[in-house]
Image (cartoon, rainbow, N blue to C red; front, side):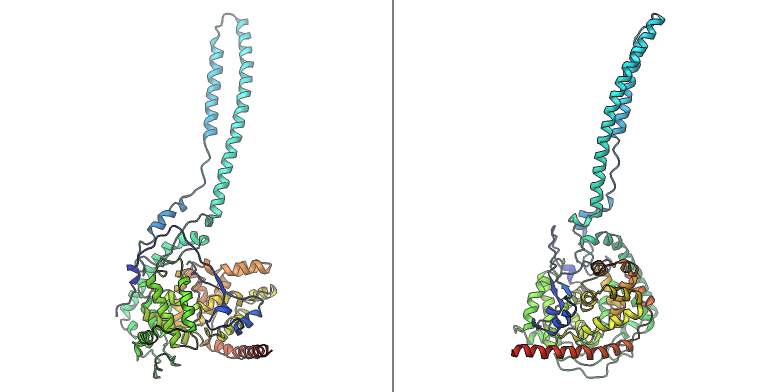
Length: 550
């Protein structure tokens, strides 16, 4: 089977804007996570325990793919690259040679004025010669002193000018993100100004690595010609499909994912080539099995509910326009319609979830590689199987369990020094990591790193999120330990994911630097903690009802 690549974006028109408007309108995760949440929701109650609320950015993190395997046109950044091509060529200005040349010319002038005067007198007698020489020497000395003073002043002026030039360069070099340069990654996302240098360093590396990965995958598939067809194929030995699917629009408790062979899993951890991502994601996530059982569900839902409105659909319409305002392709009318269709179809399929604001980012990233119906079924797999079932509901109970209890327990066991340090600073991690988990790192890490995380997330499940989040802390452990106050450590941790361009290092630490993560332990912790969170939710509802009666 030939791997599917979504080439719709290759036909999209490129909107070369010279100016960019970064929409960073942040909204509270707890209050806006679900369209049905009210101002007095349980999510707000949970977050208030931390005196603040986690935020979700309504614009994509900047964040790169090989030009040969990119789903976008390879030359779309040519104009932008030309506009910043001189950034790497900036160098400290050479010290001016004007002062030296002035010194040389002045010395020449001195010699030309003194020597002729000395030789201009005819030697008529010994006494006259001595007198003339003495007079000439004293005159020349005065002239030399005056000229030296003038040269000294000129040198001082030149040095001051040079110092001013150096200071101007240093400001440009250190504050380059204020220069207004515009750059997009290979996926069409705007690169943050403070990450441009890192992006320039890594963009060529990404292309070379994608070629190497592709060659490794070709060699693997040549040795194992049936591996790709068996991966996640309905009815294959790898598949666990045993239950009949539910009705259209009704999520099933059926397991569609499969146990992936170790050699295949190791290959995925090293990265999936861009050309193969859509087909591997579909198969490893179980989305292909879902699609095969109900090939017409997506289109039937759109047809059945065409023109109908709900709270979820109204929220989707408001959010889609502001989800990717700076993207080169996802902000086009065609792509925004596709994003709307995927989100609306899922809201009708699963009314219990409806629509959560983070789902728009996840669906948008899927549409970079997939068609609408493929993105729809992959979104179903994420919400209904890869993540706990109440991650995106109005209560957000399962996401609260993960960020408040499971992650804290893992950090305490895997990074005890760091955990003790953060506890001493009274840092509440859910304020930071809630966005990481809900968006599956889509709005926090560079795009290439996000897709590398998704490569293993679809095959290994939600525990990958714990590994990735802990790796952020592990890699930057010493820096975090050096922070002595709440504000400093909070700002540092918030910025860590956006600078994580080295996906190889990140995934190496994920799977080789943190030890084992038995899923049965995570499931048990989730089960125990959910009792606590559910009790909090019920108590909140009782208080809310009492206030309403008053």
